[in-house]
Length: 387
Image (tube, rainbow, N blue to C red; front, side, top):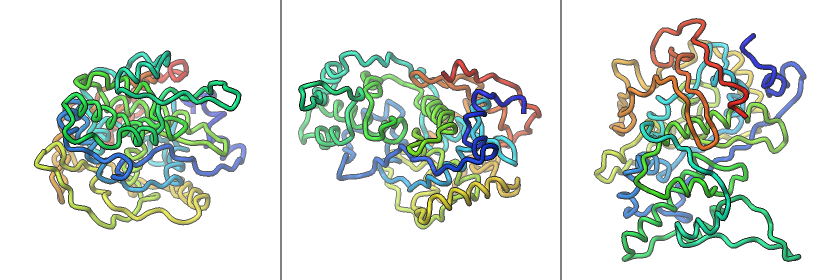
């Protein structure tokens, strides 16, 4: 196909497996749960500071519980990602994760400022101390040499120092603990770094002013796209993928039978009398069966299933037809899921710090219940931009 760039194609997992007969295993998932009461319990006093950020529906969802994910199924899907089109290339046509999915599954705000700030690490410990009153100590080896570490704090350090907000704390202290809590949650679930155990400093820096309304939804989608761009070309034994993998998993479960778990039960959802704490579409997968078995054999099975996928097996409009969009029959959907429906069709750059990725719904109009033009309008995603 002329639209496939040799720059990506010759390094792509799918090319190396099909043309060079190389054998790979499943990618490692760099994503964590945030629902452990032992590590970082949610304090109701944080709510008034998290709600203005637009993150309350998401925070309430992921700190309540998250379903387990299947690395083998995710990898089989990643193998079909193409950076040139920001979509999965399947026998049934192109499909991708869009701003609609971001709204329906994670309820992250799309409206807002692009999440783009200075990510310089100069004197990051001093700046972190000024912002939250503490910072990790420098690590020194036996020879007295300072070791170079990621600019940020480990999740263990955050839990040890900010696990519980003191009783009777002032509003400023509660706000500080709320800021750290949001930092902890988003770096575990939306923006995990390559080490998998560190909350990077620049995400805390983005929370300097808790009143700033960032476009968290477009930032998270850009981060996912960039992770997919890179992961589809990763082949080492430690090859991994990060980003909002809960979004990717539920997106896949809603549409494909490949690797889809069984829904076992639904735990009662306590919205605390606040409609912004009602469940998102992710509640459809509240308690699911966990993957068990040989991950390599499962990866091969899922690969074959995607190879033989038919249009009849695909759920093109999982949130309902346009006339009944967002009608969850068994529960009342969070209003944030539908609040920004007018933005779902935007052809626009998605900005996340250093990553800029194009949102191209024109390539997957069937996912919106619309006629798909063929060929779709072309938009160059640019090798330079991805660099």
